[in-house]
Length: 180
Image 1 (cartoon, one colour):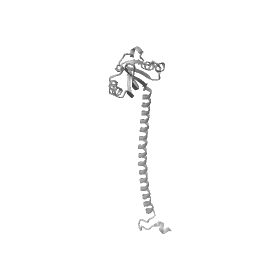
Image 2 (cartoon, rainbow, N blue to C red):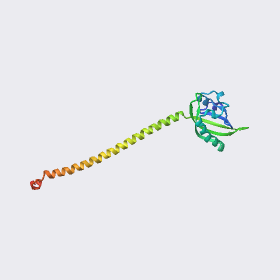
Image 3 (cartoon, helix red, strand yellow):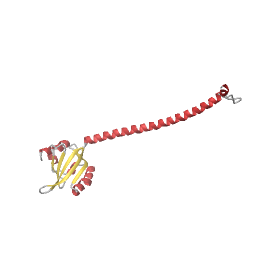
Image 4 (cartoon, rainbow, N blue to C red):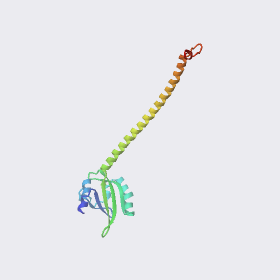
């Protein structure tokens, strides 16, 4: 394996035509907590839990066999401690001198997932605050409408009181007009 590929900033796997690992770069081995002898010769599915095996069977194999490539497959590999580590995988089929093999590039997604979860949480908070503000605005508009109605009622009542205050109740004579 080339030195640049051995220490590339992403994981690299080389699989034979039956999906057994031929090579793995140091970046992948270090990320996953494996030694080279623990992975070389192993079937790639031995690093997958059942749910990810289903994804692998339904996406990886059909695409690699039909189109010779796989783009942006989200997959989780078991690390040396049995925990899953998420990766974004791109792969392409390559014709060697005597056989076909598959080159796989694996980008760790742990930080990306944390970032997306943080974004979702922030988005949820913003949406909740927006809804709260919408409800508050509706409530304020209702209160404003109620105040307008009460103000109109008070103005009408005030007019009645003015008329009563300025009218002699016995004669219904306008006192204000008489004084002018």
